[in-house]
Length: 244
Image 1 (cartoon, rainbow, N blue to C red):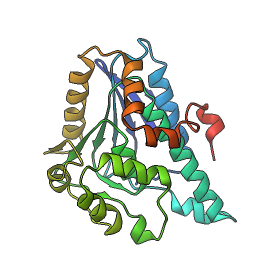
Image 2 (image 1 turned 135 degrees about the vertical axis):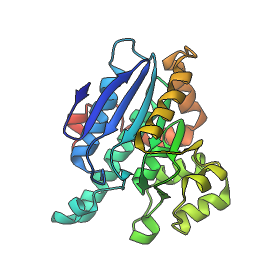
Image 3 (image 1 turned 135 degrees about the horizontal axis):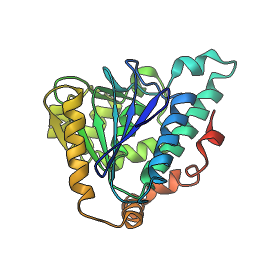
Image 4 (image 1 turned 180 degrees about the horizontal axis):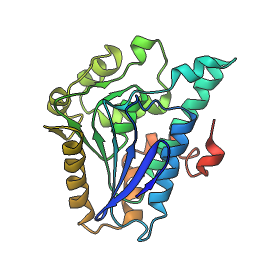
């Protein structure tokens, strides 16, 4: 297992598992953006290239509670810092879309704002049934949704009423509700490890198909061309150069 301060990367058979570590909220700020992008880059560069699949999971009560707004407000130019976080998130979404393998989000706890969007950027979403919500918190926080996030939600949430409830009403959706409305693929009983195990099982089944990884990435881009066009120029830079 390779570990960092904020992420751990391990291999379970053909599945790469990136875990956001610790009991905190896993807020997306400079350090966490850099850590996740470095982890994704390490998975991409691992022996075997595009062989396998990826699972993104998190420890604790939260999967990811969105942008680190406290960091944004601590500087002399909060709007500039928020803009920089959006650019870093755009790059992370590009990295995930371009990854040459199937991707699975194991939503082990609350996923709010950009954390919710990060989960939905994956090919498959497995969510803990007993705890956690999908919650696009921007309407309650008074924060505009970036164009690429709006496009991601439009493409990944199939029902117009569900999109309205998630984005315009700020509805906190449980796994059961999100599954019923086609937003997540499975609601899993049990604790964090049960959800991760279920996600790894899904990822292992996908990896066993033996698909060409680069073809998977190109089909992903072709399936969501508007989303890819909004993020493609941001991804691929070395994570250390992308720090805010």
